Image 1 (cartoon, rainbow, N blue to C red):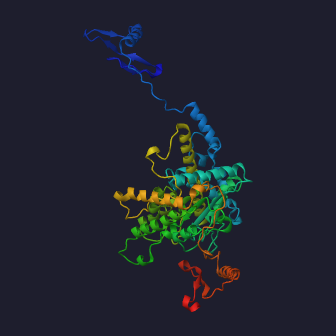
Image 2 (tube, helix red, strand yellow; image 1 turned 135 degrees about the vertical axis):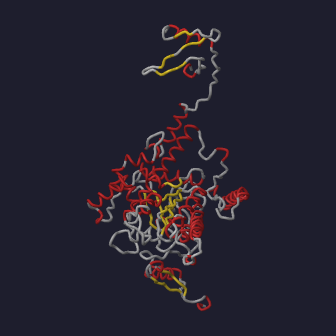
Image 3 (spheres, rainbow, N blue to C red; image 1 turned 120 degrees about the vertical axis):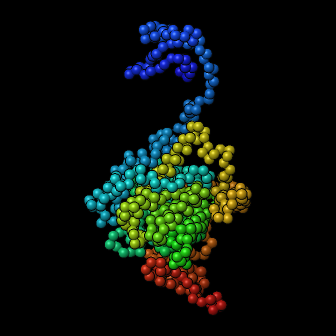
Length: 542
């Protein structure tokens, strides 16, 4: 290739850039005849002779042919074959960004954001506010803050990402024969929409809450039921309740048959509440206390969720940080949950999103009440809408990363997991050692080996090698060890529902229920409790 030849610079030739061309300027000095100068400007024919002379005299360095770094024709064909049948084929190639998709589809996103379930919000004033927020206050440059971590290296979560995009692609291609993507959202009173709609004081408002708005945003954008969002929030609870719900397969009947494709932990508000026994202690380190509390609760949820499908592809685990306070004076303490969330998302390679990071400066530094409440952890419908936008934008970033990695693997035969250096096993039951203060650097390799051995033993014990691991909606066995189970909550399983449920179970089983009753303690705040409690000891019942 002649154009790749590098000629050595000719000594004592001065180069100067003319307005329209680059030409040899200056003089040529013969080394052995000092003082004799040949002005090239007066003898332009010497310039050409000099160039020919330099080509003949100056040695041309040997050019070593290197392997091309560009994809071969065969690799490009392979890439097209692999990606044409995936969701990535619907987007620009070879690469695109979440910001590009967001900005080019803003008008359509705005229309898809209108909540038809609340007629009072369908007016010109609300529309103008929506467009102002979406086009001016929350541009793509700000929405990028929502993305805290996207799965990239973990075998199980990479398989989960691939699974959810396969579900979406099949639904888009053949909606009659393929189910929507199933998303289960766990959270407290914020998640179920308390205080969402102005002028309405209710314990929950599911149509106004962000999970419903997320479902409307996606389905109205695509003009089809692409996703089904299950709001499983329970007011006054934390990640511990969600962990038990996932662990014991406590899903609605429709969802319990197959399990969710995506599980979302939206307990940032309740997990950020300082421990009751430390709130009045002036010497207590609430920043560290909340950090440890949030890490412990969220980590148990992650581990339960990642092993909830046993031999099959685990659900994609998503963390939604929708907390802005106020529950303690220290701003660092108010951000403790976000710190713990990001640590765990990187450790387990899960998907982390933060609404708080998108609007924190607007809410805290500018005092804008659109996105937060200075006196209460609950906020308005516009905050809920922004949470749905944050989730949507972060999902586009996940899609972009997924397609980029797929393109790299197909064209360059590139393994995004790190090639030979990646020791993370391909067992869906595998979990890294818990991230705690007791986990020391000198022990971490042995702990990883122990975790791998445990996963292998569980894999064999459950006969996973004889089971389908596709996770594409096949019915699963009953996962709950309980005869009956429910989560008591106002608006869900209240006193009448619990009593009817247990009476029916007693009649069907032929076993009378003695020494138990429903409990109703509906007060304001954290006292909102409904439950099934024992009134007698076992000895008294005999």
